[in-house]
Image 1 (spheres, rainbow, N blue to C red):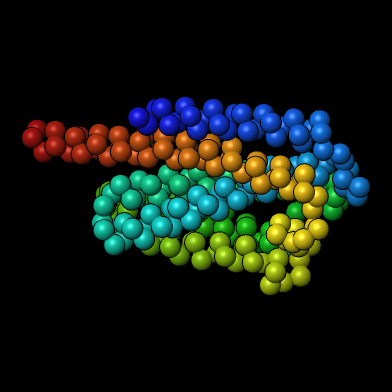
Image 2 (cartoon, one colour):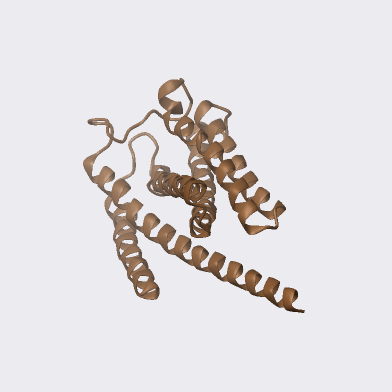
Length: 226
């Protein structure tokens, strides 16, 4: 059953992504001010959205573990945070590729970029913490608490361009007339393959976490008998 929905999700991702690539590179015109480089935003924005959705999933799973103390929620949490971190790093790098020709610099320490940098550091810290705690349930508890703490930065990242004046562009999504409808359609629909790939990667990582826990439990039983 798991394999069937994984294949279905990847098929949907491939079809939607192929359609969007055609639209992005062969149908949509260059931007009047930015030229061709604006096309990076069709990947930069959905990748960061997918990363934040994955972080939110990890946040909810962490709370579920703290309430129910079931390791399956810890497995979902770490899987979601790993995938969210991957998408966040990819999205940030794409933003840098866009910024260099448009701003003339790769990076600036404004509110949006700084809060995103802190977000990435926090979730790298989450993964480091997990490596430092060998016992599964203790690791799950510490990691869940840290995950809830780290998620506090996500609303700061999201609202930073509304709360402070930044070099990062102000929101265009949801603002009437801020973006051409054809461009908005591609921007939104490009989130679909991102989420499909994220869901598949999370499912694979959850399965790996389950196998690792089963192997570790078996090893301890063998050592106890020996």
